[in-house]
Length: 432
Ligand code: AMP
Ligand code: GLY
Image (cartoon, rainbow, N blue to C red; front, side, top):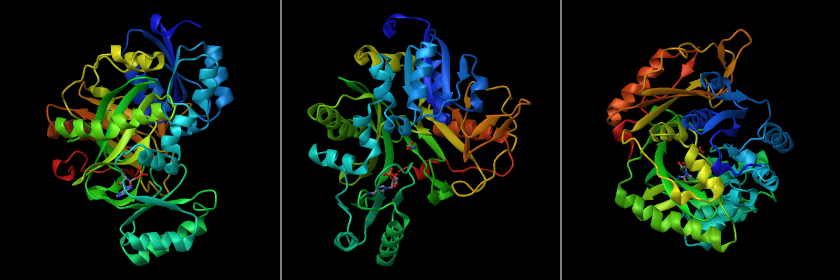
């Protein structure tokens, strides 16, 4: 196999099927060194990227993915979703000598197990909400009472950002505990994490890591609730803005209190981390508090971060996989980006699929982009809806207001039956 840092016709395999992976493929294809991009399994967005081809392999099919990497002789693998990390894809690819962007299964537990993450934060002095984990119903209830029912309830394991319950009263706490018990999400082998509920504003900070060093990469803000004004159920994300309102001074505090101790802690625990680490933070009056880690790019954050990175992400991901992150320079477009997710009517609950998406072939404007997620190509060449979150429309502008105009301008050119989207993404007042 060729050493990946020395070649200039790089063949990349991207694992995943969301708008995040579409944005990654689009950004990678801006590098002159990248000659070909495989996306497994990808989505209907691949047809808009001349270098991209899809391969029909599920993200957790480790054997199939490794066989594909071998057969196609790829030079680099970029792993999108946490389910692939948890399935051990990075470990299997690394064992075969492939340069991989993504943490191994052990390091990915920072995301895949809330209990592991909270223990890690406590062990390494990283500010986070007080918490306990409980198997027993009565003990769980009495801890909630101690926190005066000001709690966040989290079932361990993967819940794709939808696993948090924030009850408001004693009765709601009791009802939520009963429902969790009944649902099977809270069992002997899956203790419930009960956290103190924090108040403040949320931001996501991203750091790249090459197994030795880390670099702060970018920050963004996402909108998790389904409806305007942060109402409605939690979703996988209905929009995002980058940069977030973090000041330079606040970011320095986040780095000192959260990011640096995390990487020092990983080293102390003997874990090597390669890839991107996403810090989900609540900025409180007591300073930044870490809500969660994600061991991967965020979705929809990636869709608003990558359009701001001039020259694309190829050099950075190659450097991470090759252990030479310190050599990389990031050239950021100072303009903010706003991303609006268009979802199928009814998402995140029941929704229909198979509706034709109009406007995708419209001439792209240099200040707006469309990244597809739940969208598939039909045999007769149409692109139809296929999932809950269908696409992210992104706009760049000299200020936030202009970026919003660019993003919503692009939204207006698109359409499918019963499309839903929030109209307040990037509104200044909602941000902090
Ligand atoms: P998570 O699944 O941990 O990412 O949490 C999803 C969302 O739940 C976060 O983005 C917050 O909005 C909210 N949340 C989680 N933990 C807390 C907490 N301790 N206090 C307040 N809100 C929380
Ligand atoms: N936007 C949050 C996530 O990717 O989990």
